[in-house]
Length: 374
Image 1: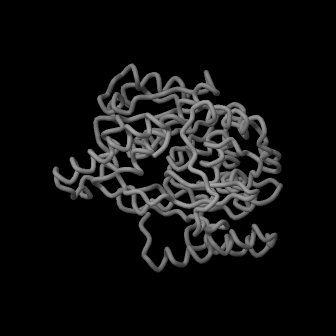
Image 2: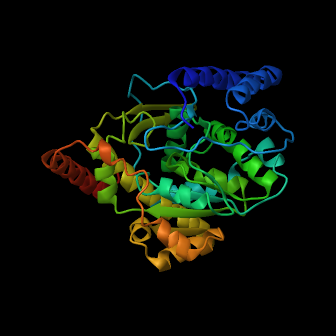
């Protein structure tokens, strides 16, 4: 579905209004705003189910996200409730320390208190979350899983604020797990989707790479959930991000931060260039996912994205079996013959520019491997 700029602006007005009213306790006002969205795009948002992002209750049906295209993604990022600190004094730069990350993951799974989000779940299902860096085939995997018994989501109506994503990142790096506001915000952005999956009796599979840092929260809320780490050759991921300008401004991507909990969360971005940020991001994501796998054991599998696109039958069969997606192996192998979301038209850097950026990337990566930080 392609919407005009005017339609998107109308949706933005109602979506943000509904969220603000619901978080403020005005559920009737939120219901009215959500009903307006249903009027603009019938049958996708489900007003009553969406209210359960913010309250205890019950509702039928499901939420339908607008599938992504190569040029258009319809979703809304929540506004920050924590502003970036203008002063770096008193902030620390955490190291990427696997022992700390692993302990943080395990503690989050054991200590997170989901409250009404857990109460609203009528039946536990073996939901699947795909962890990744992005630019590694998640859209292709989404299109494959659309044909399966799993209810597939790549885009969502809501995404957490930048500050919430950064808060969760810093808690995983430091082990400071006291305040759970960011975890609660993330649950609100996903609750209607997983409740809808229960309503239709189909496990969901989430494939948005921005959710990777919140995997411990998903594991805590859903005790039968399973996790796929979709890993592509990091050098190829770097080139895809850099050449196609998919890193953007870095406003929401995980990146090296200065931070503190004193007692509230505060942060400041370090201001590194894109190749340096990418080196940190790709290294951290791999470390985090491997730590997560050690904690989850048999609820976790690593899948080689390069093998999927090489149509490796063994790797594709491992994916189908682990996710219980009931896909036909021959059909799945054929699916990976076609590239999806390649964004080939967006590559515009010269070979010299890519090579120069790659040198910066490698220099930064060497320092991170040696010291755990930049």
